[in-house]
Amino acid sequence: MEISGKKCYIYSDPHPEAILIQPLEEEETGTLHLQLAYIKSRSPIPFVFAGFVAEDWNEALSPWKAPPVFGKAGFGNGAAETLAWIEKELIPYVVSIFPEAAGKRIIGGYSLAGLFSLWAAYESHAFACAAGVSPSVWFPGWLAYIQSRKMCVAAVYLSLGDAECKTRNALMRTVKENIETQYSLLCKQLPPENCMLEWNQGGHFNEPEIRTAKGFVRLLNTMR
Image (spheres, rainbow, N blue to C red):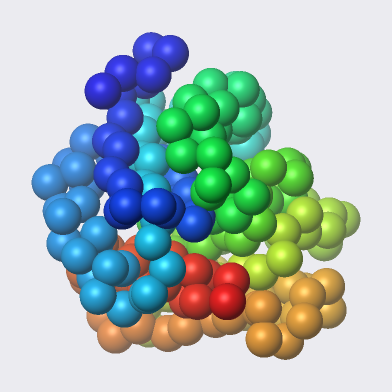
C-alpha cells in the first residue's frame, strides 16, 4: 500500500503486541516472507510489521552529508525528514488500526538502514528498542556523534558479520572497531541485558533478511 507517498508493506498477526518498523531497499521486499517467518517461529509475541521503501537510499537514510564511498553517489541528509514521516504518518496510521500495539515500537534495519535506526533511537522517543544490523557505523562523523549523545530507547541490538571489515576500502575497514566502540558506549548507558552485540559468519551480504530477523526477535523477547 501507499502511505503519504511512500510504498509500504504491512503484515500483522492477530492481536499484535508490538510494532516492527523497517526501512527497506526495493530488493529486500522479495525476501520479507523469509524474515517474517523467522521472527514468527522464534518469538511468541504477536506483532505488526510496517516496512517502507526508501526510494533514494543514500539521501533518505543519511543523517548528514558525506562523500561517496563507492562510485559517484554521495550521501545526503534526508534522515530527519524520513524520521518525521515515520513519527507523523506511519506510526499514527499503524496505531489507528492496531492501538493495542502502540506502546511497543521497535525500529530496525540493515546496512545504512541499520545506521538510520540507531540514529533515530538517539534522536526520538518514538521507539522502545532499536536494531542496527550490519549498520554502516563506518559513516564519516558517526563516532563523534554517538560520543555526544544518549540513547532514547530501552534496548539496542547490534550485529556484524565477522568478515565485514575484510575489505580494500579503508573507510569500511573501520566497521569492526567502530561497532565495538558503539557497543562499549551503549553498555555505559543501558542495563547489560538490554545491550546486545552479536557476531555473524560471513561478509556484509550474507543472509541479510535472517540477520535482521534475529535482531527483531532478540528485541521482541526483551519485552516479556
